[in-house]
Length: 384
Ligand code: ADP
Ligand code: MG
View 1: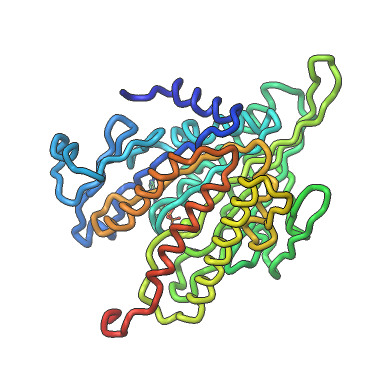
View 2: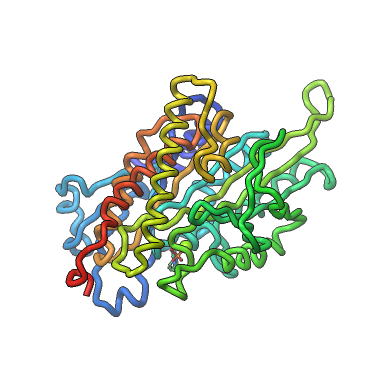
């Protein structure tokens, strides 16, 4: 049957407290774009009961029974959002519980995954009128802090960075690539802006500017960064009194990650760039799988150092970490293949039982590995 909001929040609570709980996986369908309509595309996705996703190229509006008979085209997730689900509902179902966890000193992370144009940045950042998960999480964090303490007892810092081509860049203060350093706090990007936030009002403009600073695809001048990962980290330090009335400091970190586009390689003449990026994708994959293996085997040495992503997310690997994945899809049959891929991998992510999000990265990079296999340049006559 349909999972109620109550049930959903119970699942998340379990994942907050138990070791070996699984990644929560959500799907979000975006509305048909004007361009897609103009190209005469048809709708190939149906969402039923807020959970079930049916993928078909040919079903008519209400051809529900026929959809049910289609094998491999029916998926069930923790929740599935239709093209009219408001940002606030997406936030409440996916991330609100993690924000609650952050105030209990637990780290959490939310990944948006999907092809370029599928709605990842809309979900994460949103627009001025319809702010997304990043902004709503910060807003909620402030509201929750206000509910339980007097002002002055908390500090909230934001950092926003990009990983592109194995280079880390500060999105709040663009400049040269940042060097990663290890200190008592863990691995940090040296000189990364730690923006102290006092209210939500300034955050949207700040993040929008940050997003403008993301690396732009050289081949597609107006398109942002389909190969860059953007990571917003929100760190809340919060002073509370424990049972014996001692003042204790709680620190919780929420990582909100707008991953690079998962689509198959496009026909492009930027072969050098592409192969460079391909190499880095493989490098990250290798780094990740060796880290996982090492963690699983209980080895003393975990090779975090082999990729920027594994370094940056190191502190979320061993400890308590709650992970949410939002898979973004387009309704258009033009994107049928990409949508099928995204749903397939989101479906596999459900099976991952973990106390950290490392496995998600393995999943993600194994997908990218599959993509890079398809990157071998095609003969020109196929491109043109
Ligand atoms: P991505 O970051 O995955 O490449 P975007 O988030 O930029 O994709 O989305 C592509 C376009 O679709 C943008 O113009 C965005 O505003 C729009 N869009 C995406 N999701 C939604 C949604 N749920 N509701 C309305 N518009 C959306
Ligand atoms: Mg984007």
